[in-house]
Length: 86
Image (cartoon, rainbow, N blue to C red):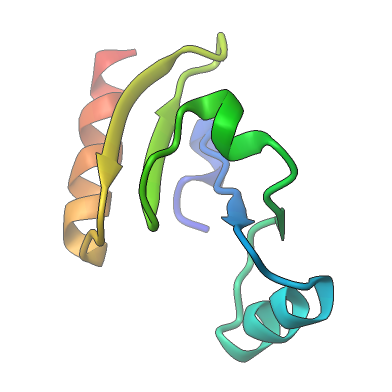
């Protein structure tokens, strides 16, 4: 991952999915970040839509969020912007 050395961690949280379905999805799309079942994470982060991107800083504070799809370029732009703020 391009941002691994900059302290960025990606986590895929899947709502309403069986563990085997999640594993198959991750393998099919060659996901290189941790994925797992929802198990209360969405509620703890205040997630209201699917997909939803929640950007959390090193102290665990939510610094930005986005409900709905993001293009790869838009996701990169937002990550770069947040890294500049540090």
